[in-house]
Amino acid sequence: EAQVTQNPRYLITVTGKKLTVTCSQNMNHEYMSWYRQDPGLGLRQIYYSMNVEVTDKGDVPEGYKVSRKEKRNFPLILESPSPNQTSLYFCASSGRTRGQETQYFGPGTRLLVL
Amino acid sequence: SQQGEEDPQALSIQEGENATMNCSYKTSINNLQWYRQNSGRGLVHLILIRSNEREKHSGRLRVTLDTSKKSSSLLITASRAADTASYFCATDAGAAGNKLTFGGGTRVLVKP
Image (cartoon, chains in turn blue, green):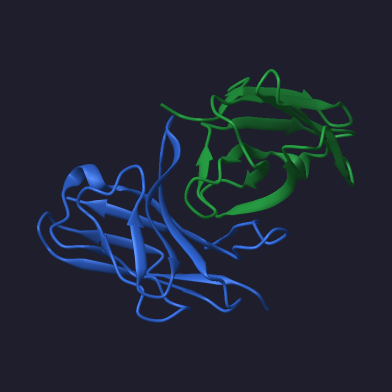
């Protein structure tokens, strides 16, 4: 089954404690992306990756890091989380050619930073 | 500011009625996509319409695109209680791969 998985699904942490949210897709997609969703603001892109070892900032990259060492994985790293990073996070992937632009979303990771 | 802005922000209808929501955007696009999100869950792709298309259908969904007005509409016909969800438009301006810029969404409640 084609899918995007994220772990963990729920996470409560404290300010400053480094954390990683994993994302994996099994569709051999080149493009992967991280979004955060906050009430009234829709989804905002944090980082994206066009392919292995190619990453770039989205609209709200501050306080986040990513890596793309393998095609299927795109972890999101919060080196020193702060309360304003409390949010619902989604990973997504898609192909890059015409007809493959549909993005497939993971189930989301709800993060609370105390 | 957001590329896509949905209108209305919330919509309440009776089962069997049609639901229409609109999306406006600011820049030129390659395509516009509509997604659905059930409460707290991931987004599910509904339909994609390219910049050279004006209308597209998928089951009970009908999407229109007017690039001269930079707007799109999503019509759900004969709504069902299971259509209760938030609906988002997202534009692909093609500037960076498949980057999508989302609007704030329309919350639709279909009452049985």
